[in-house]
Length: 309
Image (cartoon, rainbow, N blue to C red; front, side, top):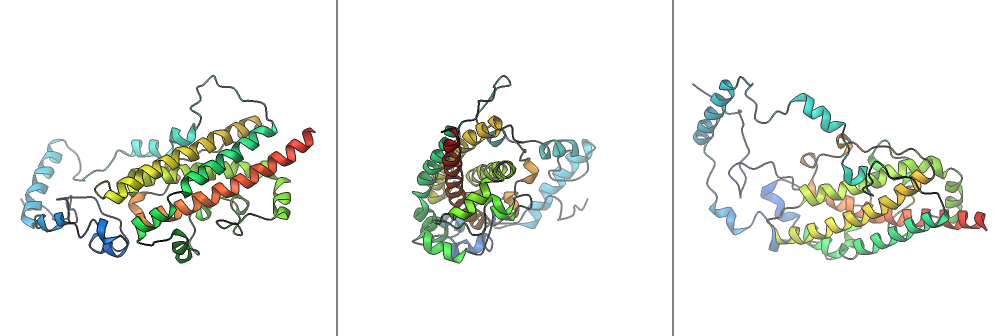
């Protein structure tokens, strides 16, 4: 029985007999152009020891899979998930950002005070400082640039967080760029409608946590030393930003504001993005957004504490 070669077909790539597609800038064979040669996963000595791809072997494996599928009365597909499970995943929210404070069902909201805003601002600054510590290392290890600030110039016209259609202009104004604060005039105007903007800003911070989480789980290669060390840094940053989200969550509940979910279906699939570019843009926007949040909540504290006096 002749089995179509397209059945369960995998693209051949160094380092594995049948790997998942590797998202590098121009594919696996050209990743040395975007990675430091010292840590490249394409010029590794293991690449020369891989077995060549043989169509006859693929046909034999495909035939065996096909027969098993026939016996179980399933259609010949590699990994099709039941539609019901797919729909469930699309309607779920990961507890990392869905429940950042790890509340139980009996948790009650606190009363709003200006100190809550001050706490968010302080935590955002702390998360910014700890995340910024490895910026040059990230630029060097992932993009072979000695300076993160030099790398920023290349990507200045590319957005990540602002690209989500639900994210409003006030969530992260285009005038807000890394290392620069917004004007006092803008902040005064924002405070007049802050409760309308906070729900979207809260969802935006959820997306930042989700973006960092995706990078730590799927955006880096554990087989590369530079990626393994970077994964630790990104994971630590994710938890630090989640701490900001927890304090932000307390403000949302204290002010009785709508908390919008961030469903799994809204988060970019790492299989469909260039992982190195994605990691850089998420990292840059994480720093920029933390700067903005620190300024916004400091302004809220200044305004609300004056009212209390």
